[in-house]
Image 1 (spheres, rainbow over the protein chains, first blue to last red):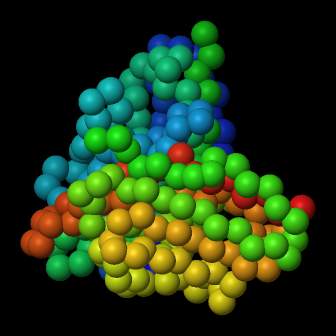
Image 2: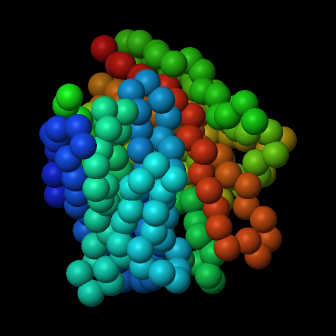
Length: 117
Length: 117
């Protein structure tokens, strides 16, 4: 079984400041890692994912996350946030299955990022 | 791509009543997932279908819960004899899983919020 811990339930920051949302996971098997974002009144959307290869992955809107196997972490970072980044962010894992990803995800509790002007 | 559609958006019911939710996935998607999300928690996996076959059910899915996906298109989730603990957001997600495909991207609906009084 897998578990995910997001260490901060709420993160308030000012616009243009850097931010890090922390995620640690536990698993007895190999996993793939994801960050999902949920904007107010919208469904969950995939932000970025790590399947294999480079441990640093990036999203199209400036977020990045680094897979650290020894620390079992997948922290999400952005060097300069915008008001529009205000949302709830969920870290998730799924077991690998013969090299393919699998839609049964284990989510963390979520981190509410609030960007203030 | 019209996205994953869930109906109703909100449902208020009295304890002991039966409720049914509907999910319409993206049309060509062969997999459909149900998740449940309670306040302050991340989504929890309930069950999933590949086409019309229900392939896995979580232990969270008690005997009062039943899900169907006739003809591999839309899906329904029914809760019988609702309890106050069933109050949650019920999320549906769909994906296109290709044979041998390494990646499975989930698209989530906006959810059905159930309140049991």
